[in-house]
Length: 156
Image (cartoon, rainbow, N blue to C red; front, side, top):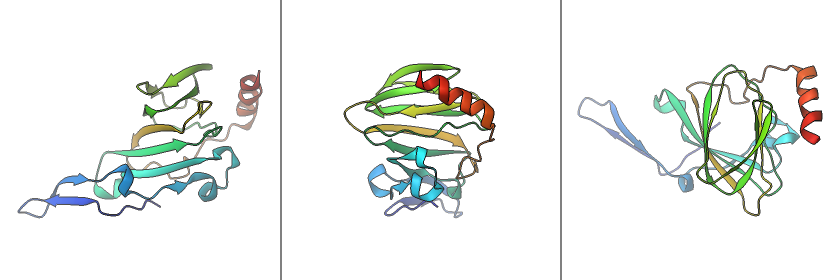
């Protein structure tokens, strides 16, 4: 699912990888809506900066949310971390909406329903760090009734 070009792996004399270097600009953006079929991901791309295939314990992904775009409501069993690198928007988590902007750091507890909207005037860029091997489609635990209530509340 991930694609990168011009990334460099440094190996020591025994052949083990000591370092892996890549860049947002050297990785291919993947349109999340077209891969997942989930229209809630309109305008969202992901770039796999440090994918599990290189042996990391945590994967690093760069996610960009276009103007007026958002992620879907997600709910999964692992914790993860988000750092906003550009733009601004609204983060929903813990039953609250808060404004986030470049420099904001977010810890998302396991099983917490969350979502991010870009209501700014430039793309919203975030670094997302997740445990190695988390499924590509986020394998959301579908609690349809709970999600519907949250969607309804979020519109208010």
